[in-house]
Image: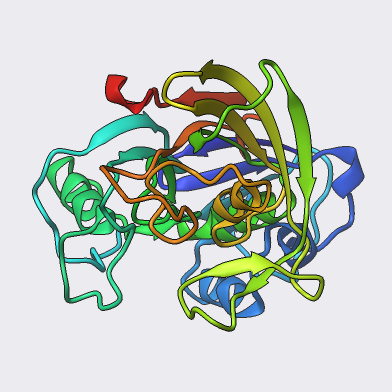
Length: 295
């Protein structure tokens, strides 16, 4: 099927392989729950060839199925009017650059001072009626790209893409110690909670599988530091930090995993992100270069 956005509608042109399927069956791969489908149906936000239909209706080749999925929503975080750097935006996704030292969202939606609050203010300022839905998170000390889903219909599919490694994420890190120039290694070590420190994680044979691909970019012999690129294959909490510490190359200024004194921000940055657009099928690649003092 081919898709196109005609705000507030998402329109599907039914192809031969979908012949005879019900609308409910067509929506299942999108992660559209039974409750969500029922809501679309009773609010007459499902049409087939321009007429409202039930989700049990069957489609045929050439039909146009339309779903009214782009609804106006109320902000669910307190707006915080600070400058926010937008890296990319379309009807489905907002990509924002998170500064080091800022958390992605508060533990209470009545609080402020987080990236989610800044995004809420951005939506308000630009006249967009969206709730704030981070697709993934970064640690407080990590800077760089954070993706937000702008439409609830697409959230399950984006969550699925993240879980299936279809959203590629690349990080830059500065580590303590000198590594071999242009060296590449894969760290395939399971990660679990550290029972001696509630805030920390560690390599554990009973932990969850975790894989990080590391490539050495540059070295500074005098400072005994190395700049590395890290590609995530999985997305465990503190994954890059734990994996690099496990080879005695902890991230510079990491307060949990580097025993050396902290002298500034943690040197971990979410650098690049790439995914396939759910509607057009085109490949989207974005980059957020770190500040000059990062390396």
